Length: 495
Ligand SMILES: C[S@@+](CC[C@H](N)C(=O)[O-])C[C@H]1O[C@@H](n2cnc3c(N)ncnc32)[C@H](O)[C@@H]1O
Image (cartoon, helix red, strand yellow):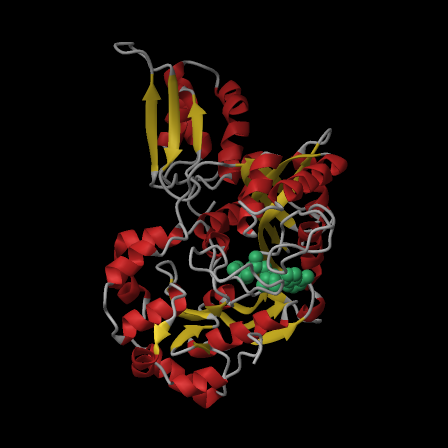
């Protein structure tokens, strides 16, 4: 049976599910140890193997088969799993008198929203025990990018959610926690088969649809669309891996995902995309992104988290394809560099695009860079930021007549020469969310410190103006634009 023919009936899924009882994230980490777990994250299996030692109980057997990609003798496998039905269902394959797993089945648990279960994918091709290069329709397991998208997703309860490019189904597993119905699509039929198995094992209902981009979204409108699309910008001449690259030129697929999503959003619906974009010689990256999102009619928040130079970028993705150290490495590297040169790509930005179908005549578009560490799950802070858009558009009088309440996580840092009477810099810093920081002068610092939700901004400014012996009107003109910026950055409760 080809490895693509993974198929189990509902009854067989129930039997497999019973065998997986106890095969949880905590149990696996306890069995392989924290160091073994960390080493696996670096694609090495030896530390975990040594921690398991000679154990052949069901937990050790499942870990060896599915996570470490080891071949395991018949007897312990029969004690752990319904072997014959899994062999017939394309899950287990025979190696002489040993068994190996033809797919990766592993427990999943998120501390952020409690999503848990088991996910089915292809074996990680980068693991040191991997058997050869990934097939073109390789189904990726949970990756750092999957976790990043899950953490930036806004988890407000919604009716309908779409997981575009579901892969092993990890985003659908999360969405099912707060969406009444979930549609999960993929271009790769094998991804849908594996996602279907994982979601059934996890007791999660999702409608799985085959199709490219928004074709499979149908005429439905969604309150939330999330996607971690195949955004890698590789040369067309190379053979592509469906999970990471497409036939689009440069960042064309990413652009299509962003611009094509807006018509599928319900009123106030949100699209969240994790991906990358080209930095092209002679054009600021912000301008390109503003063009993408500007055409959607939606509010947009684009946050660039990191920029890689072409060499770093290409090296990462050549290694991901298992090409490092192979004879074809250098020529593949050169071909990729030539492709970037031809397109004028001088860097690659990685980040998050969030669109909101807010229905405004003049949508709010913000394109910015924020490369600092953030509090996870950052989706909570993004939701606050999007809510702040309304207040940031109030008239000056509305802003001045409101009693603002600074969020309770803000602290003040002062920097200056030792022994100096006054600090050279005063910085206010959020301890939570995006952990933004802003440098303030004495007046703005004093005003913000007094924003306790009791006095209006106008009253506070008047009091501070009196203390500093400056005209109130001058102080208003001085601080209001900066205050507005802080409102937009969600420094206030219910802003
Ligand atoms: C990087 S993986 C993300 C998988 C999963 N959503 C996650 O967060 O880990 C991208 C997925 O998009 C799928 N894909 C590739 N091209 C696509 C297209 N044109 N339309 C829909 N899905 C596509 C791939 O098969 C793959 O499953």
